[in-house]
Length: 230
Image (cartoon, rainbow, N blue to C red; front, side, top):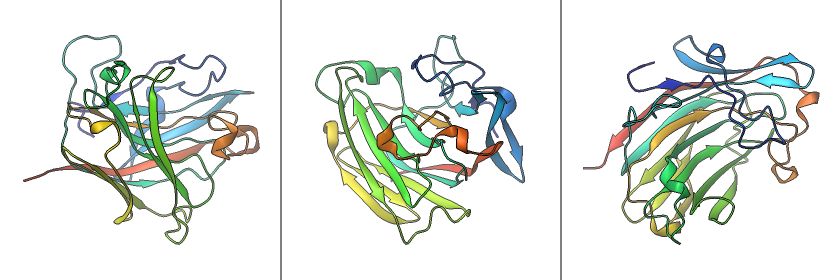
């Protein structure tokens, strides 16, 4: 892992006070094993869990430029998902400009290349712009039955981001195409995260409660690659 580009979180982000475990990140839960980055989730005590997260942004609390940002190109990660209920692994692009409310995603969009809060053959891709409370969200749950993403093996998730369109892929097969928000025109940083909650965010996600799972559990990332469009 190139530490010049990647920053490992060690903070309890309290964006959702009703879900205190959601972003309880610790550096000890991010490490290399067999050439892959592992984001581990552990149970620290009854009802208390911690997970791992890393991104290409600046350090927590720091100012100045991010470590690495990019815009138009093809993004791909090879991943292996957790096996227990209650997890929310993700591969996404973000910056604080997403919070600017002006009825457009052109100046900043959260691009969720992959979120998986299910223990079945489902993934989701989503776009968020103009913040969250008053913002606009466009997303789509992707049923990928037949590609067997819960088979315990490695799978690729990808995004082709052009100035006019987003095209999402799962295992090399196109899964969603959209120009929602007008398409982000500014560079974003890359984020790999694992979260844990009592119901993976809300009942709509369809995950069983965390308390039914066995820990530790792991979200593995073999690689993240970004290809420049020529």
